[in-house]
Image 1 (cartoon, rainbow, N blue to C red):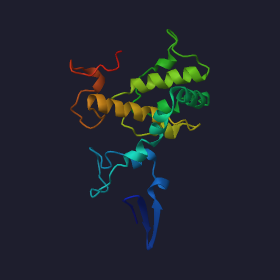
Image 2 (tube, rainbow, N blue to C red):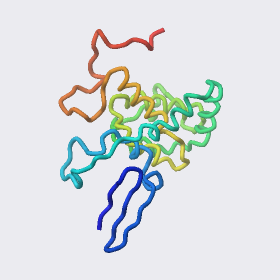
Image 3 (cartoon, rainbow, N blue to C red):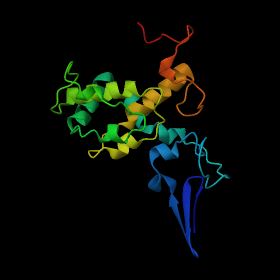
Image 4 (cartoon, rainbow, N blue to C red):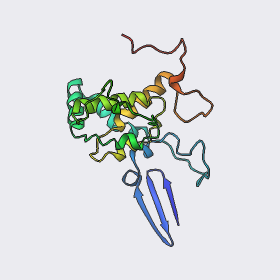
Length: 195
């Protein structure tokens, strides 16, 4: 009984029966595009022989589609998506990078967002949450998987993950000795965001 990945296929063997499936049908997008299919740290490694290669095209598919949209169309897209948000906080609850004892959305002084879900407040919640986990997000995609209304949240988190890597050459969880990204700065850090 075995499950292996062979390029763009997943092969499942049970007894004498064998079935091949396209990887894109049985793996999540973030798994298809995972940069580190063999974990850096683990208790037990099930398959040391993994020669998987990240499919960056699949990993950035939704993001590139959004980036190609004119700004007004992109705004309309997010307005439509966040209008569906019921603000159940499943994305926050499942996120291993969200660990504050008290989240900013629970504060009443100052009240950052209204308690009733409106798309504007939902957008503010996701933008602040995304910035808050910058440098800690590992692109696991659990926020998107947990969303009961299927909002493509990974499009936001993956964009931030890639931006952190591009600007600071930092990937969360890769070096346990490294100081967390937002706890230090260098005078040579890029300041392109300041206009």
